[in-house]
Amino acid sequence: MGKKVLALGEIRDGELRNVTFETIAAAKQVAGDGEVVGVLLGEDVSEFSNELLYYGADRVVKAEHYNLGNYVTDAFTQVFSQVVEAEEPEAIVMPHTSPGKDMAPRIAEKLKCGLISDVVDIEGSEEDATFTRPIYSGKAFEKKTVTAGTLFVTIRPNNIPALEKDEGHTGDVSSIEVEVNDLRTVIKEVVKKTSGTVDLAEAKVIIAGGRGVKSAEGFKPLEELADLLGAAVGASRGACDAEYCDYSLQIGQTGKVVTPDLYIAVGLSGAIQHLAGMSNSKVIVAINKDPEAPIFDVADYGIVGDLFDVVPALTEELKKVTAEA
Image (cartoon, rainbow, N blue to C red; front, side, top):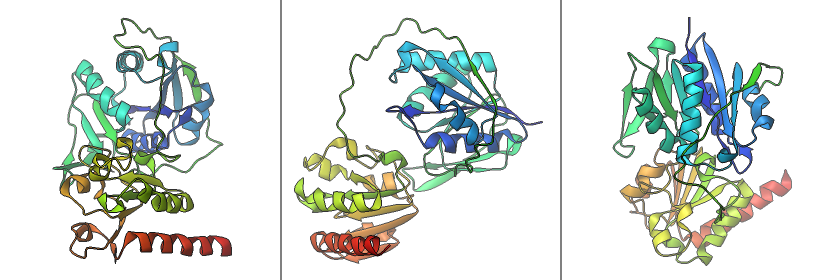
């Protein structure tokens, strides 16, 4: 018979994030023959409704309120709880992003149900769905199933493939009246330190620098290569601590956890804390002048050499390939 599954979309900087489509795909698998309801929360989200339908949602529910312009824990938790109460789903799927990680445990507590967070793979569907998640900083994986109550999971970006976009797929779009009360926090202004045009959490290609870049200037060759590849630039904690770059770029156990298709580690030794944030990348390329650097133990391809020689050479070769194309 299938399940009714709520799939929460995520909007950032006025754009629908790609992880939304991965979340819908995960919800479709969980639902089986059931219904996937895409959920949009925000101040004005009407322009995104059709996108959720194109990527597989059977219908869309919008919850709009002037207090949802920026993510605030109390406001979003209140509103999503009202959507859950109105829809009475048998399962909920959210992105495992900063808002999702903040909101999901609060919703789970309200529903008195369990939560399987940071899911990277789903086998089966409906009652037979099995969820895989990393544990011990990515050194091992566990498989979880839900036998009773509401099924609630969060999905790590770049792990569940989105469905093919079908602009012919239509469905009902409705709005729900919501209330937001007793906010403890109100955002008056957002001042951002931009780290590039590509979001680290969703980037398909990441070029990350470590202490080996030696200075803030040392990141410039990485940024040039990233521009050619349409990649995001990341960093180790060591590089951030040395003030070579902003902490918004930090990848690792105490930074962002990423799973790109290609991860190029430049001047990174490969400390265990950093590996916890990127070791599940699909292909890892390491560039380091120390052949004994631990990063080579996890790398699929390794280049032993001075990054200030290797990275510019790679950039020049890519420019030639681009020009020929």
